[in-house]
Length: 285
Image (tube, rainbow, N blue to C red; front, side, top):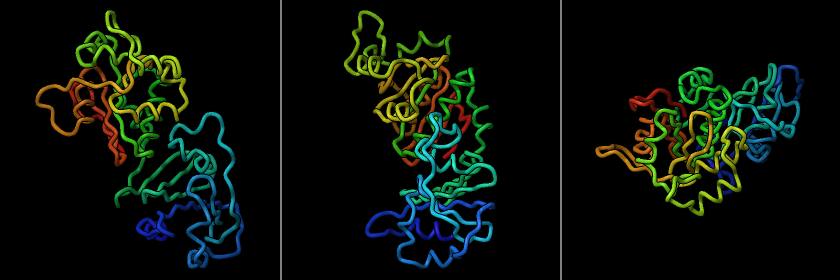
């Protein structure tokens, strides 16, 4: 951890250092990792995503491995881009990754457990956050939403995501331009963006590949789904309530939250979720 913290503030040939170390109690090594850290080649041994320097319980290097190709369904409680290293961290194994943003991620049991961001350690309590996400009600849709929040948070792309309660769905037309809906209400016509998303992606948010969901959220504007996980709008411009404070994404998230749930993902990775009273009900990152 000390070495990764030091590397987070350094560069190697003008680029941020990335690295990954795995601790495997069942392994047996020879060279002490402290000796390896002193070598000039140490910062380029691993890529932080799917190549891992494995050490035993006594910090002796056992092997340099390339993590297996991820399963079709990556671990739900890990950012998608780290799925290889997360899947390696099974049983008693622990994996630690340093990324290009100077963040340290710790994985155990195929799950992201701790992160060091901006000098602050955070413990991820995935089940508690899932419980705080009151919409959607169905577990599969709720989990898909949470997966996407993790992915966007660690992609550092930012975004705004909203879930509209069934009773409030008719009100959405007052906050979003009719042209922004994937299926616009007549006499509005489908925009090029709406036609593209409808044709190329579809409307079932839960069934989309996690990488596609993250790309949708990266578009300017808000991604909006209903309580069943049906995509209603992507990249929608929201009519902000008068007197809204904070940046555009925060104001949009709070405005849409009045219809169910609104979530803002900052460029720095912080995620904040608001309920219909615009009270913050969960945050991480």
